[in-house]
Image 1 (tube, rainbow over the protein chains, first blue to last red):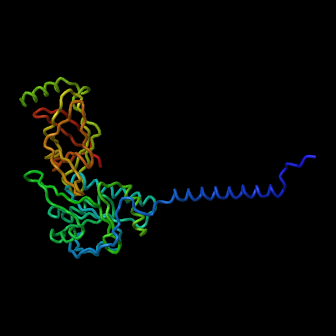
Image 2 (image 1 turned 90 degrees about the vertical axis):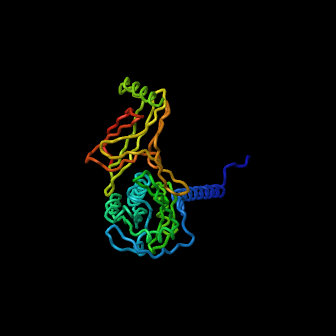
Image 3 (image 1 turned 180 degrees about the horizontal axis):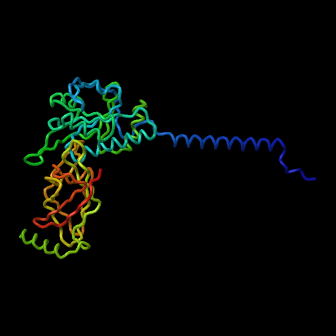
Length: 215
Length: 136
């Protein structure tokens, strides 16, 4: 008489438990991997966040409404600050359009708060508040334009490591060479992070939510 | 010698129809001057379909007092702009004017217009004329 080869009920129970454990582990691993892939990295990819934020110097400049402003003008907003000028045909409008596109994309994905775009003129001789106001409005609402006396402007740019210098194009016209970075000034009015050029909207769309969340 | 070259080029161009023009412009974009400004930039690609290099010596526009060829560069984090003076499109080659690089700088609008015309000169000869509406 042959011994039965059928598994016992006990053996079948163990097998089912084993299969269930494998299934649970597989599903859990899959879910974990999906979570990892779907969760954005928690560090900026392009911007350099300062290890210690920096206080801005005192300065007295003008906004586009010809109102006197100081360093408090940055408080209460996340500011994307670019140093350029309105008579710049290429890099400046290109950068401001990149920032405007980034802001629009951040708004579309429900980001709050949205950063404010700030243009600090490095050509105050030609960029009166009026001229600056029309110009920055072209790139969206709530943008801030800053201009004023050269000496006061130097206080701000020197403290932030921003370079600018007049450059002759021909006998009667001039351009202004200037740093191409975009600075992040946080709602406490502190210099917080820096984006190096060349700029792409996707860099701001990726990094700004992380920077603003303080991650 | 230079005058002879220009004269030869002018004769060659005169003999060409629009279809087999030696110099062709594509992807022409001229942004409307932004509010508060008296200038703008133009971008395009220039293709030289001839067997000789073509040197652009100046560009004129009916709608702007001045058109200059410039190049933007970012050197050590600083944005600079250099005038190009002349620009040679090599025979069978292509030169691209694009944002952040070579561009036309058009200053002092002279007419309230929806479009802009550009005449490219090689010496005294007009080697290319384009007319495009402004891009917003």
